[in-house]
Structures are given as structure tokens and as C-alpha cells.
Image (cartoon, rainbow, N blue to C red; front, side, top):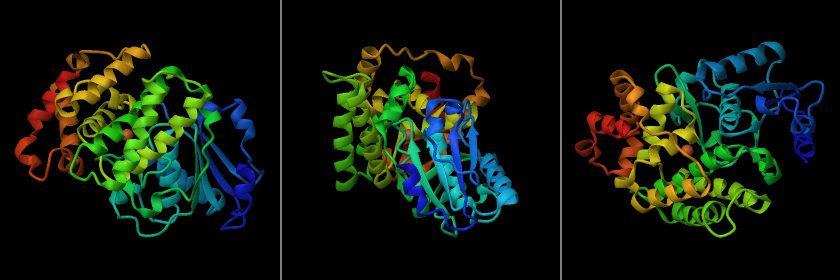
Length: 340
Ligand SMILES: [Fe+2]
């Protein structure tokens, strides 16, 4: 199917595609099914342990341009990080200079090249969000604009079959947390609510209701939940958990979905019943999150994380209110990290 979708686009620019694929699939069955032609470029990218960086995006762009010129399109096959890489590279092919120049809202000047996403793990919503999150030397912040969104997405729940149980849980919880945060804040609206409500129903079927667990039917539900959760947050906002999670990723390199789980587990005073439900889901699927992590962190690391989190005003504005600076301080955020 992917081959026929791409056939129509092949004649654009220098008539080749760039495939960016999670290194996990190298030598595996899925890799053999990728419709790569001799003129195409296939890059297997190791996304462990770090999330995509601005330097990495610039380097992929520069290498390909030097070798073959402008591709007809970029195809991303993998999890949230690969989705973000494909989206970011597509934009950077047409926008000059380093991607650090464009980290933020609507800073991109030109439409990127055609890009298509094939998610192989569900939860981050990266397949439908209008942001490509990148860690730069100064900030962890997305290239966010209307052109970031994929031109096309291929959703195939069969691809989720091989996801390991713990990552199935962590990435699924990213969707759950997107919905809870989207619903709990001042940017919530009828559109974001409709998607969050539906996505949460599906999440509960997958993770807590009777018949929950990892199976083909639930894989399909999770794939759609991820998409709807992503749409919900796109039109609302994330909150306290994502702010803390960004600090963990930027300073310690913790993977996004896992970082969310670590933080959400201790945010009962912000997300009450949902944190209780989250704990039930942990128990149901035998997931044990580490405790007392902060005892091994230096005060400098905790301060640095708190500063990253504090510098995400849109999230605090949504979760706490317009006057959030009267309530949220660096010291308070440090206290939240110390719970972990
Ligand atoms: Fe997320």
C-alpha cells in the first residue's frame, strides 16, 4: 500500500525518497516490506537513549542535500521520535540555517517537502500533532506550525504487535495523560473535549476495562486513541506533567513517555482521580515505576530541570491559569521533582 501511495509523489524535486526508520527494525521483517527503490535513501536511526536533537536534524538535511539534492519526500517509520525527525527534516529541507532558529511557534518561513508518517508504536500523537519536538543546546521545544503536520499518515495496527509490554504501557499512558491534561485547563474547548472524551474511552478499554491488555483489537483502539489524544491536545494544551517531563528529558535524557509516567505518578494534587486510575493501570499490567529517583540527583540537576519546566509558560498558563506566576515558582517545581 505504501508503495502505491508514494508512486504519485516520486516525480517531485530530485525524484527520490528519504526513508527514516527506527534502527530497531534493521534486519527485521518490517524492513523488508519498505518499498525502497534503488534511487532512494534509507536511514536507520537509533533513537535510544536520546530524543531527536537539532544537531541531528541539521546533519541529516546537510548530508542528503550534499549527496543527492532535494528529495521528493520524507517517510518516517517508527515511534514518536522518528515521527518528529521526519517532520522536522521535511521542514528543514526548505528552511535555511540551523533548526535551532525555528524552535517555537510559527517561526518556520517556508512549507517543507512532502512527508508521510507510519507509526509503529502508539501514544505520543506525533503522527497527527503540529509540532516536531527537538532538544537543542538551549531548549527542548518543537518546530510548531501548520506545515509540520504530516501530509499523509498510514495507520496499521499490525505494526504494534511487536511492541514490548512496558513500552506499550508507557507510550499508551502518554495518550492517557494528553487527554487528562487537555481536559484539565483553561484552553479546553468543545473540539478538544470531543476528541479527549473518545480517546479516554478507548484508553480505558485498552488499559483497565474488562478485556483490557495487549491484543489485536486493543492495538487498533490504541492507535486511534493516540490519534484522537494528539488532536485533542493540539487544540487545547498539555499541563504540569508534560512540563516536568520536558525537564527530565532535557537534563537527564529520559524518554518522553517514560518521563511522563514518572512525573504523573506523583501529581495527585493536580490530577486527583486520574492519578489514582493511573496507579490502578500500573498495577493491572505489573508495571513497577522506580521510586526515590531524586535522591541520586544533584541540586544543580534539579534546578536545571525546574528551569526547563518553568520556561514552558503555555503549559502553566493552561493548567494553572493566567496568573500562574503568582503560584508557580522554581522552588515549587523543584519540590515536584523531589517527589520523584
Ligand atoms: Fe506527550
